[in-house]
Length: 147
Image (tube, rainbow, N blue to C red; front, side, top):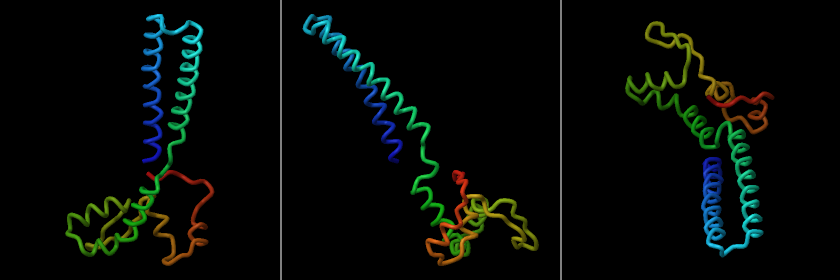
């Protein structure tokens, strides 16, 4: 995902700072770098390290609640579940019910009562062929992450 790639890029850049410090120290100890320039460059590296660490902490704190891929997967699975349920073997049916439903009760070999898991419940409440205005009204003002 993009967030993971961005995080890894920041970590890589942070690791490169150690190598830069080492090169500067080698040049300074080998007397090929003036003390003033060495101190300026080390100060710049220290500042960059602080910036990168702050960016890493910020990126960790603002991880996306759900990615588009996760939302798409839930949407497609929820929309095709009833048709797939009719076509699969009993073991797969049981797996599908465990994944989609909670608190299901069976009576006379039929599902008497059920409740969709929180991820799938909004799909169940949304009218078929709803336009974007109807879909947006299904959102509440206190969005919660998908579980």
